[in-house]
Structures are given as structure tokens and as C-alpha cells.
Length: 238
Image (cartoon, rainbow, N blue to C red; front, top):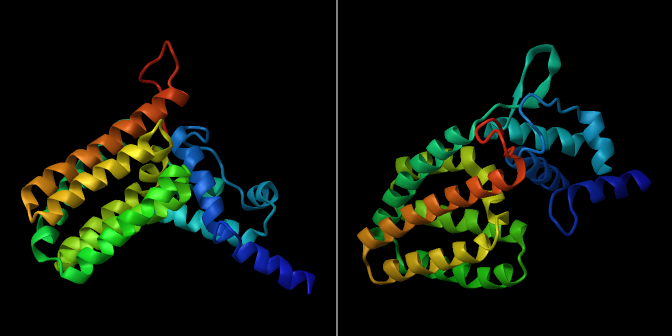
């Protein structure tokens, strides 16, 4: 019975899957620079740290490998991947253009049901912002953008958007911790929603591009506030 209780505790709690909680915690540490490039990630040490078995830790690390934040390096095993801030900004710029194309097409193609779903999601995010619940808002944010991808009714475009988003998911989550970014993000969503409601795809596209670039700027400030040495402004890695 004790074993079953342990399994239940490790698979689901108030915050969802334990593996997700471990992944999110490591994601924040990698994105902020607390875990620097080359840092070894050992399953048993992480299991001890999070009070878990190795199974959820292994799953969390697998997801981090898929996202590109962690890599397998020979005999050293799993280590934090090297990714410069400049590289991350390039990824955000690419994502901004893809997301802008998606929302422009979605504005003209989404069904009334899809529009209703988007409005429902957006309305529900207000409570998350007021509670400053980054994890809940991050989950909502993913669904919000995925609904837009789906509403393009272009499966190839949606796949490309999903692929780029997966590469950036860690950083898109972490940027929400900078200042009042979570509230600004929702305000930007509101502006995008207004353009969609008016059937103005071009305006929705411009606002989505700005939304993504604002997220990139917030992440850069988050990084700078935490890991940039005063006398070595460009000497850091994620």
C-alpha cells in the first residue's frame, strides 16, 4: 500500500505531474543561468533533491533533451546544453514571424466555434494573471497559441509553428517571471483578440509579432538581471 501511495504522489498532485514540476524547475534554472552550460544532471541526485523516485526525474530529463536544453555528452551523461542569448533571440525572431503568419491566416479561416474557444481561454486567463500563477498561465498560453495554429486549417504551417514553439517552450515560460510580464502578455493577447474579432488579419499579425518580440525582450531582461557580471557584459551562457 505504501508503494502505491508513493506512485500516486509521484504521478499527480495539485501541480499536476511530478515530472512536469521537476522539468519546470530545471527549465527555470537553465534559462536563468543558475544551471550553467556543461553542468551534469545525475538522476539519483535530482531524485534526492526533489524527493522523488528516478522515474519522474528520467521523464523530466527526457523532455529537456527533446527541447534542446539538455544533451547527452559521452561518458559525462546528461549535461546542460550550451545556448547563447543571441541564439535564443534568433529563435524568438523566427517564432515571431511564424506566429504572425499563423494568426493572420487564422483570422480569416477560423470557425465560430474556434473563435469561441479562443475567447473562452482568454477570459479564463484573467484569474491566473491576478494570482500571478506562472505555471497555470504558461499552460493556458500554450493552449491559446495552439488554438491559433489549429485555426489556420493548414496542417503543415501548424506543425512548423509547434516545432519552433517546442524549442522555445522553456524560455517562453521563463520570460513570464520578469517583472509584470504576465499581465502585459495578457494585454497583448487582448489586442490580438480585438483584431481577430474585427476580421483584420494584418493587424492581428503585427500585434502577434510584437507580442513575441516583447516576450524575447522580457527574457533578455530576466537573464541580464540574474547572471550578467557587472564588468563582463557579454560573458555568459545559458
